[in-house]
Image (tube, rainbow, N blue to C red; front, side, top):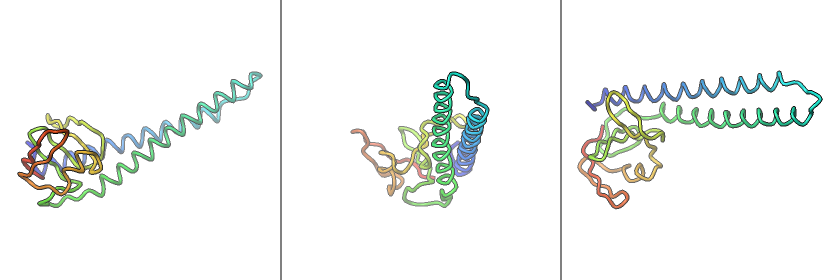
Length: 151
């Protein structure tokens, strides 16, 4: 059942998921650094340089992922828990087309036998939902979507 307690559990679940991504990224960066540190120059100098460059690129990619995950965690921690009449980040929005959690943009999440769409307020549908209220309609991709509930 989707209610305020469900929303609290969902928020905690998403935060834990982001924290796990942060840990995974940090571990991958550490591994890439250790691999780069243990790589030794051989008689095939070009191979050594290419290998180090590839490890550096991998580390940069992981650093970018880490930064994104840290930003997502900040967004999750800043979400408000209060009841509101008008939709804002932190709200769970129930529609006939699905349930949207205005939080971080990670897409479809299966949680406690429910399918939730975790979207940011900056996403196309998020922009339409922000400021609307229960029983209002939004027009998205040519389809009218009625807001059944806001938690």
